[in-house]
Image (cartoon, rainbow, N blue to C red; front, side, top):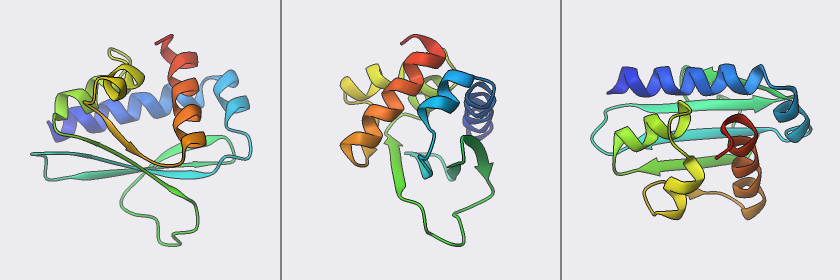
Length: 119
């Protein structure tokens, strides 16, 4: 399952970086996103910096940007929420995907998923 989530996050990164509308949405929005799922012995980190998203090898060394926490009890929810086959906004509203961040960041993430996947 760890590889499936890594692949889903890589697709999210690729879709994000290839979309000019998303890049416009995240102008001046630098964040670190931490992903975790129960039952999986891995944690993933992504950074959004200057309109580009990248998958990190571990937690950022500087710790300067605000961190958004994304967590779920079901690893499959995490994978489908970020590979384009599911809706992270729907998973969050259903209580299957937890977001720990400022409300403005939550709205930004919802807008990104809407632009990328229409859901």
